[in-house]
Length: 488
Image (cartoon, rainbow, N blue to C red; front, side, top):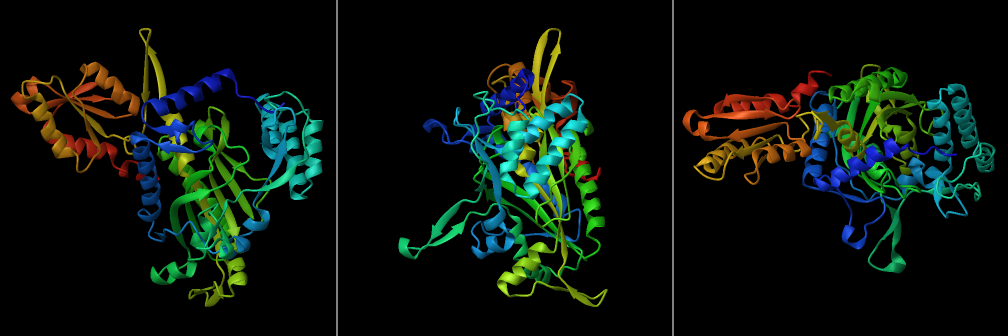
């Protein structure tokens, strides 16, 4: 059978999904109309968290390295772009349907999840044998063989429990639409399935205008669209998603050295963000994409198992060479150090902003029990927490709200600050824990006497008395991206 999530995994994921909706992180899209499968909206705290994660990635790429610059390319591109990139002919997933449940699956995922069962049981040899067979069949485009492998392994539909399968067939993942004012004259174009091609077609523009020398990189954050066969596991696999990609152009012959360097750098980035080492692993690809000579994933242990968050690929010179062929425009770089024209090779780092969001949410979700009392809080790194501090007057009278508002006015231009005066101070602390706010600033009657406040720390619940004049510096120190950059 295909791998099923354990009750504990199901419960944990359900708790996280429920928490995400109840506390304003993620909502089902157009929920009042019963939603749209695999499409989600980010709420007030979700958009802050996602923006912080994107900004951290962007600044890591473009500020900590002098040889990487950014770009923002269009979602619509000339349709020949996708012919040159191979997406028109090769951007397919093997699809299979169960005739009894009428459910559709990716055939390769069914086999991979079946292999994962053997891996968890300690039978690594069988798991490797199974994934090896799958890779060979897919390389040979032997779809009949893939179906036979599913049957031979006794893989059944998780819904119906039967192995009454259709044939395996390829399914192109690109969304198409028409451009033109008159239907008869409209041209078919595609919503981009990745952001990388917008970088490649602008390679020479950026190189010349930003005066870059190889090796150098171009970074981009943007929306991409894929008509996934099976979109599931909350925001892990969606049809509309956001990518953070960087293409690093290098001299041919040096690509594998740079590939290893970037694989190490990206793993260090995840660790610096506070992801536990045991929750991360590298997974080398057995089946390489048509453009790659090396590829690996950084995987995170989600409640539903280890899954890809980021990919590092050595794309060779495939993309620029292909665009040169289709466009008839040279995509070469003159390297003065070797006095030679060449098409650069490319190392790609590609991370899903939504998957990084889910990783951060899963990693932060913390349940603790003390004195038989359960406490739930989100343990975000302060640098990416949606709200940096909450200012809470102890009461609604005696001038405390006015004093608290003065503190908000002092801090709000540099930090995302919230002000709350409703309910007891304990309930307000709890609410801030649930959205991951690292600091709560309590304003009480002593504040009016000596301009000091109480700071409560989210992770330890410890409290300390500090001067109002210290607040800005304390919050800035704790929430600065520098705290992460120093670990890289």
